[in-house]
Image (cartoon, rainbow, N blue to C red; front, side):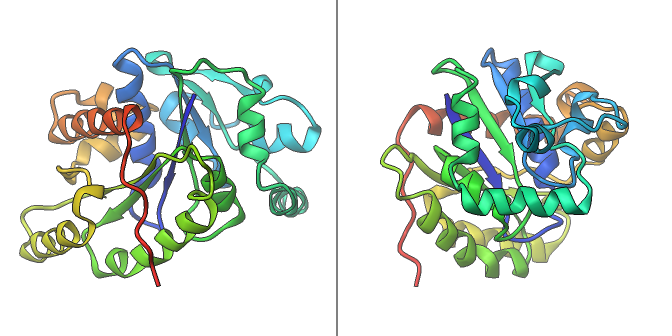
Length: 262
C-alpha cells in the first residue's frame, strides 16, 4: 500500500474536500482507495454518503481494541471509507494520549488490514501540529500539503516542513512531499501574485496546476458526493483529475525529499 497523508498548517484551506475528491479521482482511475478520516471533526464521511447519525469509526474501534476492518464502509468509485467516529470529551483525551504514547498506531492499524501493494490510503488530518497529524506523518509514504493563495499559508510553510522532517523523513521508505494550491480565484490580482510567490518558493514540489474556486465543490457536499460526480465537467473537476494524475505519478516514482528548514 501507499499511504498519503493530506495535511495543512492552517485551517480553512478546503483540505477535507480536496482529500475526498482526490480519493474519488484515484478510485475512478481503477486504483483501490481507502479514505481514512483522522480528523475529530469526522467530516470526510459526508462526501461518501455515510449517514450523518453514524458514530462508528477508527477512533472508537481503537479504543475498543477492535480492528479497523470493522468500521470500513463502501463508498462511490469503489472507495473504502473509514470515518473518524464520534467521541465524547473523555474518550477523545484518552485517544489522543494513546496517539502520543504510540506514534506508529496508524501505520500498524493499516498494515493489519493486509492491503494490496497497489492500494492507496488517503488520510485526512486536522490542521496544525496535532497528535493526529504527527501520527499521520509517521505513517505516510507521501505527504500532500494543502495551501491557499494567501499570506498566512505562505508563512506557515516552514512549520509543516519542520513537522515532515521530524516525523516522516526518518522512515527509509518515505517518498517525499508535495503541495497543492486550492480554492484559487483567478479574478483577483492579489491571488495571482501570491500564486506566483508560492510557485517560486515551492519549485517542483508544487502541483503544476491549481484547484480553482468552484461553487460546485461546496454544492456537491450537500448531495453527499464529490464534485467529480456532481459536476464532472466543471473546472474544479478537471483540476482535480490533473492533480490526481500528478499524485499518482509521484507515488509511482521518487519525489524530492524535504529541504532543510531552519
